[in-house]
Amino acid sequence: MWNVLTLLRRPKAAFGVAVLLALTLIRIYDAVWPYDPVADVDMARIFAPLSLEHPLGTDQVGRDTLLRILHGTEAFYFPGLAACALAAIGGIVGGGLSGFYGGVFAGTFRYVTALITAFPRFILILLVCSIVEGGMYLIAALTGLVYLPQVAETVYRKVLYFRSTEFIEAAKVHGLSDGRVLFYHILWYNCLPPILKHLLYLFGYVILIETSLSYLGGFGVQEPDPSWGNMLAQAREYILQGQYVFAIAPATAILITILGLVSLGDAINEWGAR
Amino acid sequence: MRGLLFTIARKVAFFLAVLIGVSFAIIALSRAVPGDAIDQITDTPEQRAQLEAMLGLDRSLVSQYLHWWGNVFRLDFGESWVLRQGERVSVLIGPAIWKTTKLIVPALALTFGGAFLLIALFRFDGLPWIKKVIGSSAHLLSVIPLFLLGYLLIMAFNVPVYALMERGVIGRPAWFALPAEETLLKYALAVVTLAVGNGTLSDVLLHLESEVTQLVRQEFMVSTRARGGSFWRHFVPNILVPTMTVFVNKAGFFLGGVVVVEYVFNINGIGMMIWSAANLRDVPLVIAITFLVAALVAFLHLSGDLLQVAVDPRVRES
Image 1 (cartoon, rainbow over the protein chains, first blue to last red):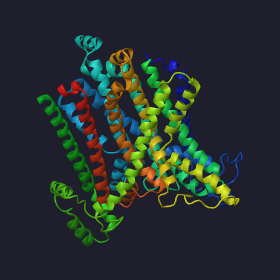
Image 2 (tube, rainbow over the protein chains, first blue to last red; image 1 turned 180 degrees about the horizontal axis):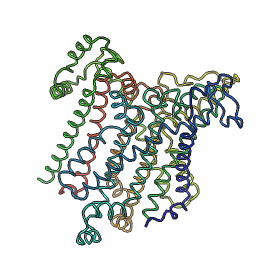
Image 3 (tube, rainbow over the protein chains, first blue to last red; image 1 turned 180 degrees about the vertical axis):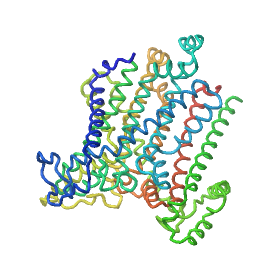
Image 4 (cartoon, rainbow over the protein chains, first blue to last red; image 1 turned 30 degrees about the vertical axis):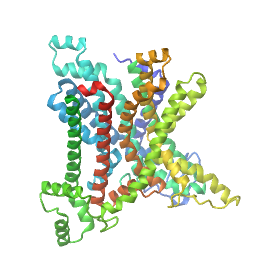
């Protein structure tokens, strides 16, 4: 079926897989050796130069920048996965059933997705956050929700196309159940790459939203917990004093991670469409 | 003709239904959990009851909702609770809308103009290396989140100038460190950031490129060129609808991105206002802005659909 090795031969995909793997290993490392942002404060080593002990130096209260970067993945890793699960389940089930059966369900689902897409994503997240206290999982759930219509639309179009193809007609005549035809023969065999592309983009989008909110302050990750966004916001104060690494490190982390996820998504999509 | 009218009526009805659903979702959301917001601005239970009576929170949800719509028709969105306490929301958001328009319209023009220029370049024969470098760097730049791109642009201007200022080579320029005044440089950087970041440029570029490629390959386009007919006369009307679709789908991104860009560049527009209002739990202000923005997006979707009906005879009959 899906031959993963032919995918990994693409440089974009290999880069993306490496990024995902690195994120996962960092999460495991961080779970085994937890980082305590308060205990790490050491006023004796403010803005320490780069050394083996502090490969990326230290920040304005002497906390190790590398450790904070590694721990910063906590803010989006599991919330990101949760958002992907939400968008995947909602989008596949909603879009799939709409395309397969049509009728009242499809009409209602189209209305609900139209409601969601009418809100600019960032503004919907701000609206809910201003009313409900929730933290990162709420933000991630909202991000998954606002991304759901896009997944659903892709699935819907695909199912609509495949529904009337000969091999699906044949499968139906063979007496296969609707669920098996829809989820196995249409979605699993023929629609996986574009769905995966959307989910990888969504994971990148969760990082984007998390770092943006943390950078703006208020709703994102709060000090002393590190996030790549709030590290960059702190670095803003010290960049004119020549503390470049302090700013470059989180900026690079954000860029490489999002770029990795997006290019893996693109590579999977191209690989599936070949 | 009857089919056409029916199609238009159906689309308008869907738009109205979305408008009602959106407003109901916003009101229900803001009323379902009023505790957080009202507790923060009141101290005693009596104050709380008084405020609830004043805001009509003691009535039923449906009654509140109908009351709210009645006010909307009079362009009355109530008073700000916290951010500018007691001022009318409708008065507050007027100037902010103008500042945001000055940001969004040039950004849209830059994204779509830039995308079409790049597509023209990609379709031009020759210069394979330069095309590849420009194409990849456009996509690479576009991956950068808005706040980071804005930050990098600001630093690209401020860090070298600061170094020159320290050595006494030049004096402090008026735009240094982003003052609150509206300088041209600030607006220009904000427009570039909004037009490129958060994947906007690369997304628009990808969509438009595939639309242009499909259109140019169509048989009537090929035969038009073979007969020596005008390429543009057939190209422009046919690319208009797909462009409008991409534009409508992207409008929400621009309106959401404005929040980040205005914060980073210190511009007092709608985005900055909703961000401050959300932080201070200024619910009427947040509701008003969210509703207006969502209504605008829904309206753009409707116009996109209607344009499609006007241009494409196949849609009319469906």
